[in-house]
Length: 494
Ligand SMILES: [Zn+2]
Image (cartoon, rainbow, N blue to C red; front, side, top):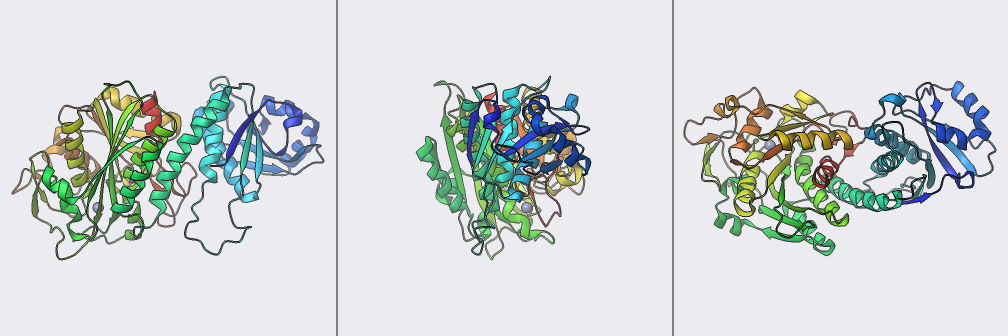
């Protein structure tokens, strides 16, 4: 992430490209209007000759205008002032970040201000977060970028009355490092980001204070996690269970557990995918969210005890791969008939959930996974699906998602969906038929959690945008966006 600093709101601090919030009817926000009043006529004229109305996600650049210190003014639309929430500032920040990146400026100065319902500090941090989310790039595999092609943005200065934003910016940096780690992991191709790469990445987090433990095939076999292991049977890479612990809370306080699906590539297995297989490097986005969250908690020195569990496997085809109709035994003891090898995430998560609940007795557990294509049919790329056996936990996640701009929408858990998982030969089938695919997948997971408060977040529709889907995500971000990291950090710290 770029450098971010605070300065008082003073005319002499209006340097570089200045970013000003603008509400409907292109009305400059009041603090910004006062600061740039010398050039108000020029701004008016520039707006008049444009399509800019101050709508959310709109931006309009006004040239230097002969101002003493400014290089230019970037107007950023916020929409209706009365409707602005914390996430409106973040969304506007994303639009601003994209405009600054496209323009190729290295430094910008943001005039922060709140509204009646959002205080200045919240507004400043959310906006800066949006800029940071938009400035992120993934250029690891580009060898022919010229200096002019590369990302240039280096520094954001935020002008605000509230000096305590400085402390918040340090925390924001920790959050963004976690988010960027998650995005990198998802963006890396599957020939790089393998289960062992995930494990090595986790080990590197020891130096920021996380406890990290890796279990391979031998240990998992001994534990009886055959259901998870069955997914990796066709792959050259062995399965890894990655366990990360952050002990920032009181000693003896129970852990909250996060469990992530880490299918580093999903060919579908013998039920081979017929479409969008090139997108399946992102089938570990849930585990990336868990790793990113654990990284952010450590960087932010969050006062919570959290255990993150990642089931990392590759779902491939070979002579040893699991066949449709194979029956495997789970850690919990239930036998499962694998009637579709492409419904593999639940096999990984079911064992990981049962193991962490049995071993660590967490107070609550939340899993996150690109679990079903059906969830994107239901909710598109705006909401992740939320399933839970506990209303309190569900409402915490709903509230956190809304405020950080990673919204979740509650879906039903019902005995009827469990009944759809009947198997002819075993305790359970891993698929429930053609309808309600996301609900039967969640019901399958629920079979492995018992009484522990549990929630499942299905991010298959929201984790990544790109050419395959033909559009950027609803938040305006392209590629992997780290969905889950900001949601979880907010939920865990609140
Ligand atoms: Zn699959």
